[in-house]
Each structure stands twice: as C-alpha cells, then as structure tokens.
Image (cartoon, rainbow, N blue to C red):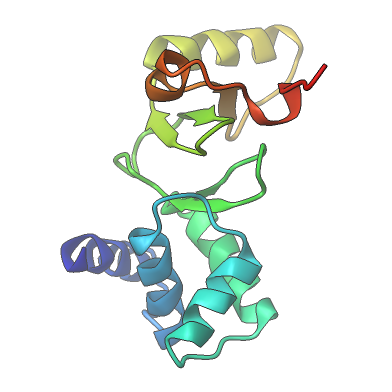
Length: 154
C-alpha cells in the first residue's frame, strides 16, 4: 500500500502541488478502502485513527485528487475511490455492483473515441468524460442476489 500512496504523492508533486499531511491522509484512507467512501466516511476513518480533518479540507483534497485523476467520484453512490488505472488514461469506466458494492475500473479506447465523435457531431468539445454501469458482479449474479432498489418483496 505504501508504494501506491508514494506514487500518488509523487504525482501531486509532479503537478506542482505540495504533499501536505492532509493530502497524504486522504490518499491513505482511499487506498485502504475496499469500497467507495463519502467525504464524511473519510473524515470518520481519520478520526478513528486519532487524526482530524475538517470537511472543507477533505472535500478540497478530494476535488484535487479527482482533477489529477488520482481518485474518482462515483455517480451512483457519491463515494470516492482511488484511481486504479494509469493516470494518463483519458477515459475511466466503472462497473458497480448494486448488491455488494464492488467496483471495477477499466478503460476502453474505442468507446472513448466513439463518445468523442458523437460529442463533436453535436458541436460539443469534450474535456473529460466518465461512464458508470450498475448491475450485478459475477459473484452476486451467480448467487442469484437481487440488486438493492430493484429488490421486491411481493
């Protein structure tokens, strides 16, 4: 885990940002997490470790990490995850399990190009785009698990 955190710190510094204590702490929490975390969950995790960061600092740090492609905000949950791909990948895709919350991140150059062409046809100049699919991971699908809000009791 330390190597991944160190890599993120170097990426911050390469972009001209300081490796502050608060930035290191947020990166460490994201790296240790096994699921997307909200800013409040990140703050709570730090407080359990005896560290305190106010919400403004957590949000500002998350915003910076997302701008630098070191973390991502998932639309489906509002939680943040550490980027698992090379920072140079321009398009990040996410498959999110609605049952267990597992997230798989991937890049698809062909899909990215198609989206850029579609946007150009609309006269839109894309700077960044993210795609997220929700459903069931192979493990939950194999167990016949129902997905959260789609689960019915009737």
